[in-house]
Amino acid sequence: MLSKLWKISIVPKHVYLAWRFLNDCLPVKEKLIQKRVLPDPICPRCKSELEDLDRIFMNCWYAKQAWLLSHLEIWFEGIPMSFIDWLENTISKASCDVIVYILLL
Image (cartoon, rainbow, N blue to C red):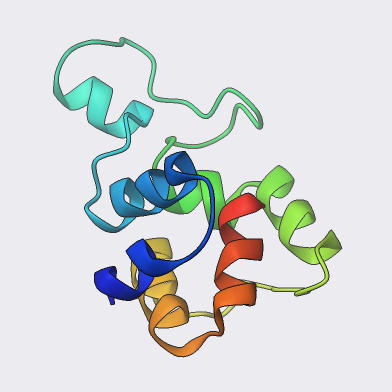
């Protein structure tokens, strides 16, 4: 799956960002709190819940709107998996065009 990701014709920083998603190494507040870098774990956009990858990319109202307004019209409600699992599954099954669109979104 990662080999498929690296073969996509897109700006390398987008592929690197996806690689960081899949390896769970983005500096979200949840991780920064664990490392004692930040004192406040709350999502700065919605100010209601812990900021983690799932919150940022699936569960936050702003993320939901971005996915719904994209031409993919993705709705994460009821999907019993994390964002990382969803992204891995999508990359393994989707066409390169869809993967590029998701990475640019």
